[in-house]
Amino acid sequence: ITAINALPFVQTVVAVAARIASTNDPVRDKYILEKNFTPIVNTSRTTNISADFYDYGSYSFNEINLHKGQFLHNIGLRGQGMQIAMLDNGFTGYTYLPSFDSINTNAQVLGTWDFVNREATVNNDGTHGMQCMSTIAANIPGHFIGKAPKANFWLFKTEDDASEYPIEEFNWACGAERADSSGTDVITSSLGYGYDFDGGVPNYLHSMLDGNTTMSAIAADLAAKKGILVFNSAGNEGGSSFHFITSPADGDSVVAVGAVSSSGVVGAFSSYGPSGDGQIKPDVASVGVAALIQPPSAPLAAGNGTSYACPNMAGLGTVLWQGFPEVNNMRIVRALREAGSIASSPNDRIGYGIPDLKSAFGTLLTEFATSSSTINGCRVFVNWTSKDVGAMKYEIERKGPGDINFTKLGELTPAAGVSLATHSYEFINTLATGASGSFSYRIRQIIDTAAATFTAVYVDTTVANLASPCVVTGVVNPGTINNYVVVRPNPSIGATATLIIETTDAIQNMPILVYNMNGRLVQRLQETKGSGKKIIDLPLSKLARGKYFINVYNKNVLIGTAEFIRL
Image 1: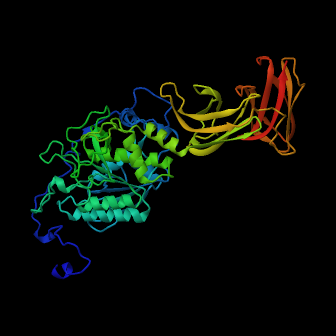
Image 2 (image 1 turned 180 degrees about the vertical axis):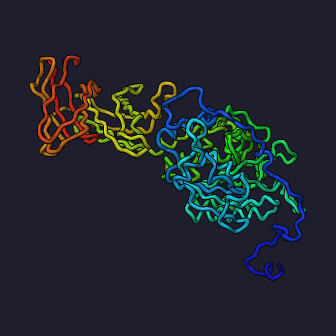
Image 3 (image 1 turned 120 degrees about the vertical axis):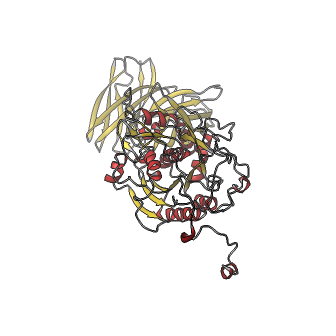
């Protein structure tokens, strides 16, 4: 030690563990709270809501509904392609217990390592890690669905159940380093240090839990600096003399998770904040009071502990990030805090509160979406890019010169699909003759169209400036020379007119939109056609007298336009 301490690059030398031969510490169980299970025989739903992608069962539904997290599952975000590293005391049972049959069948466990015994097997020691993992990975339809059941996992044992020494914080650092080198996106750790070391090793003072002193906090913040989204349980010391969160939950870039019930009531055992340097801790809260877990044997059970709140939140954070890979880990941390139930007045029990994942999604969506507008003659072309699924809807609103409020111009159905994807769209607004000035267009995206859970966000606004009065000079046809769209007779007197569309290619998805002189969508047809010419009877009986414009699309691409007069 003297020689090592003399090396120029060594800052300090401290004892981190006892020699194995001289360890006489009594055997104890730091997970006694989490092992106090309440068996649950029936977790099936009393009502069946078929709109959800998963049949959660009553317990799972109540847990995920606290965060509105089922919204993310329903738009295809279930953890696919994401990697989660779990640092714990072992995962005995994950290879054969029913909650994990799907991840085993689909080979979603990418690798394992025991940093305590230096072996690949993690299925022969503690079960605490397995129980925590079940909150993310479980897939028992109608009974128990985890928060990111399609994610991939790295399982690392860093905790030594036989004793409690600082060496385990160094194991934690090794696990985080392995996670980083393996390509991990998210670390979830239901471990905590500093309150009750063995062998006379001094406990950490609360002032030392400042995110910069303990080895585990330094390692956790470094993992976050590397781009990993790090979650850690706040600790179960709320009823003890120590009272506060443990490390590495004190890391300033770590999401410390406190425990609440599925109805939002704080667990008395959940550790208090703030950190030693006054940070708001915990950061957020999730279900850790009577949380549904897979115990070492059937049936399913309810358990208490921030150990379960942490992976519950980590699973939801994983699927949120899956939807927005363009942002970094700390933006997801901020999104979770901003979506907290008490974000405007955080406290030392649940931090910023219980995150609403649908709200977090909406915030990130508005930051991602972009829009622009261009003017060609008397037409304003509004273009935007956003993320959506086919079940969502867009509404286009306009505020013209002298208008006080925005007015809805029309609607657009997103491209078909059941999984969140990025798409671009165009809406054409034909201005009235003589119009001029500044026209603002905003895009309202309805992300949940169900009446009971209706949610919409304004994703972006764009402004088009028309310097001189609009004059309609003729038909604009942006299609190729081989495409044409005409209306006959024109003007039209009867109840129908003949719409003639000719293209060289077949079109499977051909929306036909009819606008009045004010640019308002008054009629929409959906057609298909083969190559060549197609004749369509255009109904006119519900149209008032006046001039109209027709836009014909191939999916979202404008292929031709026409004008006609209804007499």
